[in-house]
Each structure stands twice: as structure tokens, then as C-alpha cells.
Amino acid sequence: MSPRSFRYAGVSAATALMLAGCSLAPDYQRPAAPVAQQYPDLQQAAAGAAREGTQSAAAATPQVAHTADLGWRQFFRDPRLQALIGIALENNRDMRIAVQNVLAAQAQYGIQAGARLPTIGLQGSSTITSSSQSVRRANGASTRMSRSLQAGVGISSFELDFFGRIKNLTKAAYEQYLATQEAQRTVQISLIGEVAQAYFNLRSAEQQADLLRKTMQSRQSTYDLVQSTFNNGVASALDVAQAKAQLDASRADLQATLRAQSQARNALQLVLGEPIPADLPAGAVFGRDQMLSAVPIGLPSDLLERRPDIMQAEHNLKAADANIGAARAQFFPNISITALLGLASPALSGLFQAGNGMWSFSPTITQPLFAGGSLAGNLDLAKANQKIAVAQYEKAIQTAFREVADALAGEATYSSQLDALRSEQTESQRALDLAQIRYKSGVDSFLQVQTAAVNLYAVQSSFLQAGLDSLVNRVNLYKALGGGWLENSGAPAAAAAQAPAGQAGGAPATAAPQKTSAS
Image 1 (cartoon, helix red, strand yellow):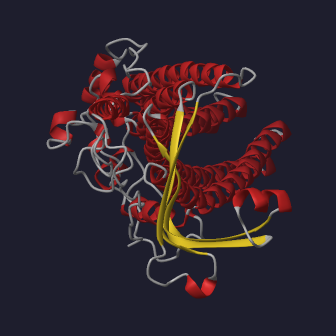
Image 2 (tube, rainbow, N blue to C red):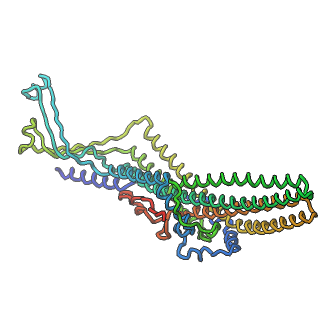
């Protein structure tokens, strides 16, 4: 080879290495968070907790700086609820689907990553050619039929990724895999919230049924008293009818509550994925002590690194950037090689004899000149998808901010609301007692007793509903801050179960669900 040829070969090799180290994907820059720097009602929520006499977040969770790092076993203190959550994580079908989606994304990443390496395998071929007399005469061949057999180890059409097309496709598959991991965590957080809400709905329905049974007993006693006074000629038929109507109304409400109780049990059974076991631990007293009294709130910027659905949207955005690089690479030459090292012979009997060694090396380069606009269309599509991914990422941040803000508004107001309802319930009971005394004394009609009884029951029902809403609101705050995918407080949520950032060529970590026990 001449010195000039050596020089050209060196320039070509250097150019190839330079291009192989380049990427045509845009440099990733995280979009600015389109939300305020601080949550509204944060101070009011802290004041509400103080009125309740609960601990501060620092006192309640001294070793956890972020709610996302707070395990659900530490947040939920009810042993029965903990057991139910463990059962749901094992058996819920949505959770199983999420796990399989992660495994599918992991397999897809492995398939795409394999395209960066050559496919090497055993190859064998046989060629039989029939030539015309003129061709045989020109080539000096003596026979019309010619045979050729080849066997060896070969590389089949391996693309040299000088412009990063395969590299970017692999990067996109890797980011999709990470996004699916975050989607699994989102499913788990939602599932834990659903179990808690279904459990609280069932407990609330049981409390409501107990209240109605007591109300029925009270109204039955009142009805018996009015009926007795009517039989003695003191009460009127109107008083009897009003007392009977009250008693019937409580009976109807009890049946509606029993129906709601059965439906709440069915909803809980659905999220569990199996019948509710009979050997569950005893439940804690129904109230806010079933959960941790306070959780660390942090700043809105913390959600970017702690909430799985936001991290999922960011991985999808990075995948969209990589797809732009792959689309741009299609405008440049495609270089591929095919090679074979082995044996060749005109007859099978002599294929493995000495002196039949052969090799072939076939590089191919293809430069697109006209593709009917498909290449430009692919690039435009990739850019449009990237803009969609940006909007979806920003929307995920806005949704998370709103969910946290709504939950904080609840924490700021439920305490005062429950205090007011508690006081109203005391005064309504006192009003009913006075109305009954005045009715027995003949001062007032039975209408006053009826009105006071109806008011007391309405206040008691409102108190139970507000208590249920306050429990669900605290669960929603825990979920909104990214809590729920860790079983026990420990490793930071953003770092657990993830492959090192930027190592798209490495083997991804397996995203197995956390196994829990129902005991």
C-alpha cells in the first residue's frame, strides 16, 4: 500500500471515530417548573396541626426529610390497614400488570441495545449456476453447471453507527424503561391510597350504622312514650304520627347505610384482589391516630426528584430528545458490513480439505437522495412528540402542585371544622334533652322534640363524614408528596432501584415489586 493510501486510511479512521463519538440529539435541559416556589396554606396547615395538639413534622418524622422516603408502614399505624395493604400489593391485578410492563420495557431495551453489537453466527451457502454456451466459451468453462459451497463464521449486515442512530434509539428505549419503572411506583402509590380509602369508607359506614342503631333505640323509646301518653289521652294523634315518622326514617337510613357498608366491603375486596381474610389483626380506634400526625412538606422543587409520575414524564421527555437524534441520523450515510471467514469448495466432499480457506468482507454505504419526504416527516414527527413530552412534563408538575395544595388546604381547615361540629353536637344533644323535658312538662309540642332530634342526627352524621374526609385528605397529602412506594423508611426514593444515570448501554436493574406479608 502506498504512503498516500495509508494517509487516506488514517484520515478515514479518524473521521469515523470522531463521528462515532457525536450525537445528533439535542442537549437535554430540564424545563422550568411552571408553579410557584412555595405552597399556599402551608402556614395555615401547620397552625391547624397545632390546634389539634399534634406533633410537628420534625418531631413526628425525625429521621425522614422527605415524605417520599417515609415508608407506608410508618405512616399508617393501624395494624389491620397495614395487613390489608400487604395483601393488595401481593394480589392486586393492576399491580401485577405494572410489574409485567416493567419487565416488557426491560426486554425491549435489551433488544434495542443488542443492535449496537454485531451478530456473529455460523453460515453456510450453496450456489448452483447454469451458464450459456457463449458465457462458458468466454470464461473457459468446460461444463454448463457450476457449483460453489461456502461455510464459516460470519457477521451479517452490521451497521456502523457513525451518526448515532442506533445509540439514540437505545437511549430512547432505556429512558422508556426507566419511565415504566416510575409508572409502576405510581401504580403502587395509587393502590395504597385506594386500599386506605376503601378501608376508611368501610370503617365510617360501620360507625354510621352504629349511630343509626342508637338513634333508632332513642326514637323507639320516644315513640313508646308518645304512644303511652296518647293512650292516656294526653298526647295527640299528630304527636304519635310525628314520632312514628321519625322512627321509620331512621329505619330507612339504617338500610341505606348497611347497603353502603356492603358496597364499601366489596370495593375493599376488589383492590385487595382476594376475599378479605377473617384472621386480620384488630383495627385501631377509628380516627386520625390511625396515621402519622404530620409529614414533612418541603418545597415544590422537591417533587421533581421525589414524585414518580413527574420523573416518568421527564424520562419520556429524554426519550423524545433521543428520538430526534435518531431521526436526524437518517439523513446521513448508512454504513454496514458483511463478513465471512471459513471454507469454500465446488463439492461438499472436498469442503473440509486443506487449502480451501476463504474470507470475504463486504462494506456497504447508502446515502439517501430522495425518500419522498419520509425522512423530513420522521424528523418533524420526532420534534412534535418532543414538544408534547415537554407539555406533559409541565402538566405533571402542575397537577402535583395542585394536589399538594388541595391537601394542605384540607389540613388547614379540617381541624377547625371538626372542633365546630364537635361543639355543635354537644349543644344539639343539650337542645334535644331540653325539648324532651319541656314536652313532658306540657310546655312545648312534640314538634320541638322532633326538630331537635333531626338536628342532632344531622350534626352527628356531618361529624362522621367530616372525620372521614379528614382521614382521606391526609392520605391524599401523603400520596401527593410521593409517599407510598417504600414499605419502610430507608433509601431515598429518587435513588432506589435505578441504574446509574447516563449509562444507557448498561444492563438495567430489575424493577421487582416490594414483597410484603399480610401478617
